[in-house]
Length: 115
Image (cartoon, rainbow, N blue to C red; front, side, top):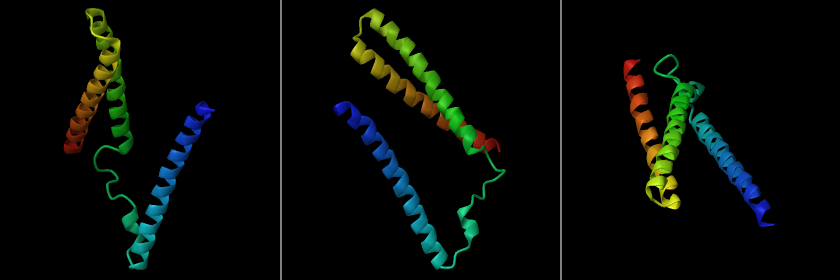
């Protein structure tokens, strides 16, 4: 019975986040419209300027996945040396994932400066 609670809880959690996001966004937009703001403020002014959001997401995802792969490789080497598996794998994965995100941040910043 407990095994079914995890997926149900996950989907309820995701639904709650999406629901709160859209209802809050709708309330914010309705308040701006009531004050007489134009609808153009809802759309991004950054079209054609800088890297697109898709490129940034793909860059960060690629770097994190590469770093996780390297982390697993390093953890396997550390395990052979004598470090416990329970320490080597999570530690290496978290450190390398953070490093990948940090590298992605600096590359994104560099891409924005170039454009």
